[in-house]
Image 1 (cartoon, one colour):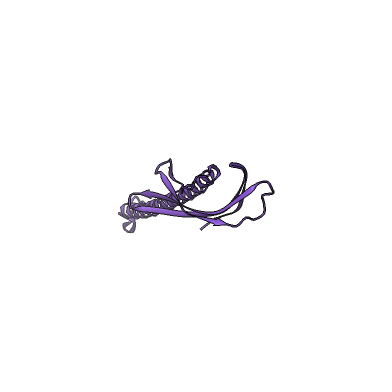
Image 2 (tube, rainbow, N blue to C red; image 1 turned 120 degrees about the horizontal axis):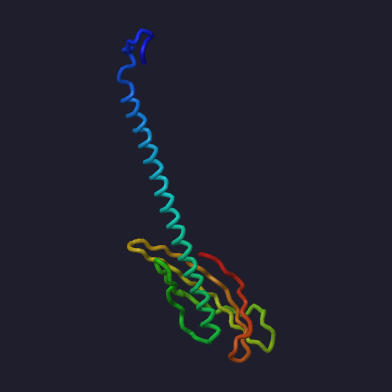
Length: 155
C-alpha cells in the first residue's frame, strides 16, 4: 500500500506470500480431513453392505431347507448366492419339534426349527450372520399343502 506521497509503508512489505502459504496450509488440512471422512464413510457402507448380503444368504439357506423339507429330503441345504463378492449359506441344524396344531385332519404336520448361517468371504475378511426359523408344513400324503412360518429371527 502506498502512502499519500507514493512511499510504501514498511510494515506491509512482503505480507502476501506468508498469507498465501497460510491459506494453502489451511485448505490442505481441510482437504485431508474431508478425504479421511469420506474414506471411513465408504468403508462403513461397504461393511454394512457385506453384513446385509451375509444375512440374505442365511435367509436363502432357510428358504432352501424349507423347499427340501417340502420335497421330503433329509439333506441339509447348502449353496451360494451370486454377487460380488459371492456369499454362501449352510444350514447348520434342523431340529424336530412337536406339532403346533395348525394343521387340521387329514393333514399331517411336520414341524422343524431350522438354523442357517450365511457368510461372505473377501480376502481375509469374513462376515457371518445366522437366521433361525420355526416352520410347520402340512402334508396330505406326500404332497405339501400349507407352510406356516411361526418364527423367524436373526441370531
